[in-house]
Amino acid sequence: MKITEIAETNRKTVNAFLKEHWFSTDMVVRGKVFDLSHAAGFLAQDGHNILGLVTYELCGDACEILSLDSLREKQGIGASLMKQVELAAIKAGCARLTLITTNDNLNAMRFYQKRGFDMTRIFRNALEISRKLKPSIPLTGDYGIPLRHEIEFEKRLHA
View 1: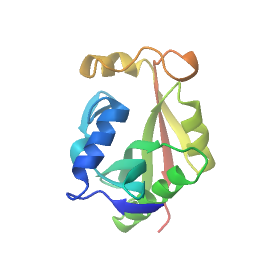
View 2 (view 1 turned 90 degrees about the vertical axis):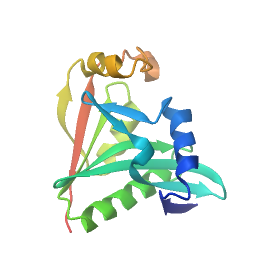
View 3 (view 1 turned 60 degrees about the vertical axis):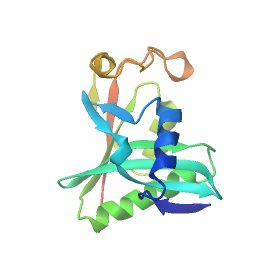
View 4 (view 1 turned 45 degrees about the horizontal axis):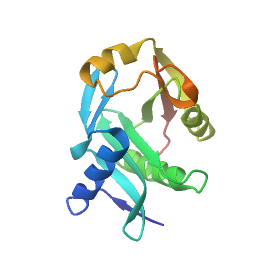
């Protein structure tokens, strides 16, 4: 597995991956639309095959993770991608990593907490607003759980 930074040379492949896995290159978080087709990030590859992808945005003293995908769970792909974002955030002088996930994403909640993230906020019924901006967001998520809320996670960084 090789991890590389998203660049113009691989942007077309990255955007195709985002469209396949997120239905578009737009991500709606807290009622704001993020265009991931230009977002910074890293991808994990095995040859020409993408195994995982993470995108992020630097915002003041924070680095917000916008998307994280790993096509093979429990093989260290997501953890390796997260480590690269953490190093990039520290290099940029960020004090914390933040991210949002939905209430149905139990696997992600476990993954983030095992890596030092704490739940900091819940945005109740946030998906009602998000669906107005991105109607393709389903009503039901993982494990048949109704998609309703966004949960914010944060990890403090130490240089």
